[in-house]
Image 1: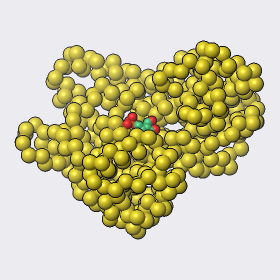
Image 2: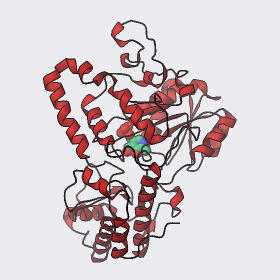
Image 3: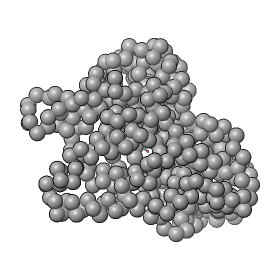
Image 4: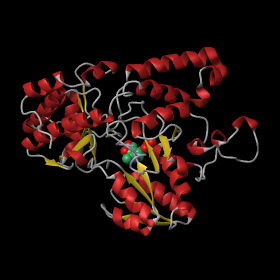
Length: 406
Ligand SMILES: Cc1ncc(COP(=O)(O)O)c(C=O)c1O
């Protein structure tokens, strides 16, 4: 178990010895903001903003030639290879494309004919888009859909179908054991489609070594790729070329510029590229990755968990109910606490420069991106929370007005 700091001075000492401390300077964050919401949208790395500038020039000056001269045509694959290194996959096993929702659909549809049973499984506390995609795919494919109670993994795997599951639960932050689940899936002819949205960039992921075969995830959280940054698809090398995408677009064709009327998929995971990639977003993502590349993933995971342990200890001191695992080894990058008046509390925190998020009905989430947060920042943010709760300063009309995004 991690022993969290028990004073602000101790927190500052941890900052002095933090091997990631220098990374904060790579981000364009306003002064005085405690960005505890990198599990939702990461702030901009300066490298991402620089790449956006360069991309504007490539567009304006290079025009359509930039597909070749600026390397736009293979940017999704090159960026995929860089993401592969961050999730424990090999070169050629990842491509950037579409959104997580679309990729869940493509991968689940491609996996169904290869599983022992033509059945889709999802747990009822899974992120809603995963549940909607399962229901929608079930309706058009004729696959049975089984929605399981939380913790229903064993039932799903022994039944031998396709199981969609998050590595880090979006609400609790609990981490699933990829290797153990894959061993079980293999025994029963099941295929697991991992949702890495809350895991990429904050966990020491080893997809290949742990036997993961299919995954997708997002790049706008801990990879800091920007709002609406594209998602990625992972398919293990030995499986990828056996998969038929249900959205066979021209960018996944073996020879898109042959303009052949008959679809012939590219080798490997690249077949999951459907249409033209969003180059401006990809350029931003590509610049953002420079902030994280080359770091030991375990260092990121350790710091995120240490910051989370600090927040948990402080929140317990305030008498709050913790909804995330106390065991650091099974917790991802965020910590959730139950606060019935969570919405106005989050607004009152924002008014003091502390960014968190609220999830209905009563969950406040704090995210601990290891690249740009310090122990001191988290300590002070928890002071702000304690003050807002004890003074009830959250109970003002302006903090109760609901925005569309919470
Ligand atoms: C676990 C999980 N899956 C899927 C999504 C949605 O991804 P997208 O909007 O790229 O479809 C999110 C978004 O936050 C998420 O947290």
